[in-house]
Image (cartoon, rainbow, N blue to C red; front, side, top):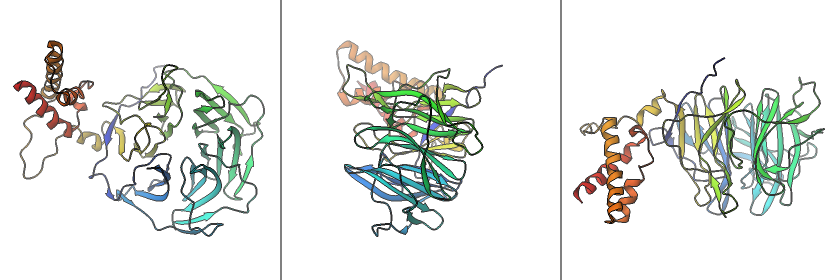
Amino acid sequence: MQQLQPKQMHWVRADSSDFGGDRPAPRSGHTAVIIGKSKVVVFGGFADKRFLADVSVYDVENKLWYTPECTGNGSDGQAGPSPRAFHIAVVIDCNMFIFGGRSGGKRLGDFWMLDTDLWQWSEMTGFGDLPSPREFAAASAIGNRKIVMYGGWDGKKWLSDVYIMDTMSLEWTELAVTGSVPPPRCGHSATMIEKRLLIFGGRGGAGPIMGDLWALKGITEEDNEAPGWTQLKLPGQSPSPRCGHSVTSGGPYLLLFGGHGTGGWLSRYDVYYNECIILDRVSVQWKRLPTSNEPPPPRAYHSITSIGSRFLLFGGFDGKNTFGDLWWLVPEDDPIAKRDLVPSIDSNSKPSTVTDDNQLLNLKVHACMCVRFESFRGNSLPAFREMEALRFFHLKSASQLRMDDIPVLLSEYGRLLST
């Protein structure tokens, strides 16, 4: 039986035509969840040596970002959760539940609910024992009532415990699991698929970054099996070991993006990723998601939210920079994808005289070849000129050029011809 290939997708950096209102500030270690199909809620994170406690909302229908005025009462009299990052956030109905995270050098163990209809915070205290304080845990919804959380880091050790939280009773229960278990970890992903919780990657007890995939059974009410872990070794192009990545459910597959791994024993630095890898739920194998253009810069501790047939990427960190950019990952026939290929024309301007793909590609290749030829002759061009021309050398098709790249490319091409 012939396997269906995943549909080719297209990355587009969001611009002012996509959103109204005030976008969220740059950050990493935040959470972003989708409420029904109507809104995306961003909470917390870390930026500029500060932990954040703000709430930003994207209204999908009205294409508008806004900051709701949240009310509430916590056990210490505060209106909402303290600033934090690397917490968990899971949605059940219109409610966003958050647990744990980090603020400064402190791991948090408080439990909050945000009613996104009323924009009211409630601290969930007095409903039994809570899991121990932790950061870098991962969690997922079980149906429309329960939440499952696995692992994390408590400041002294990596964790491997599993907790189930019932949103009706608001009680947490530690799950007793028999048999083999995954190594303790943090910075992993956790995603419910059918009746199984899948965890992938993370940083482990001995410090290495892992690339293993495990499935936990026996956690749904209709599942009569005893809880137990199974390590999965699936065919296909499996992701390299990583942590701080995202896994987002989108139709027939899970989309894995980003994260960071080690640069090898000769490197002191982590390697950050930006490829798209999918776990095909039909064929049950790993595949590379074909994209028609260059992806966003590599990053970890970002968020990706599924909105219909689109994915929305926000924020993250690459070891040096904290991102505040927003990117769409869309099917090639999406109107957003098409705007990258068509010049935007003001009513008072004339159409660009350079619109043919082959013509653009020839300009790019010629400019890059000029730079290489000049360097080969020993007549080195000014450094900035070489850098600008060579920044397009990796592109395989002129359709991968962004419209705001073209003036720079043409300018450099003209300068090269005049030398």
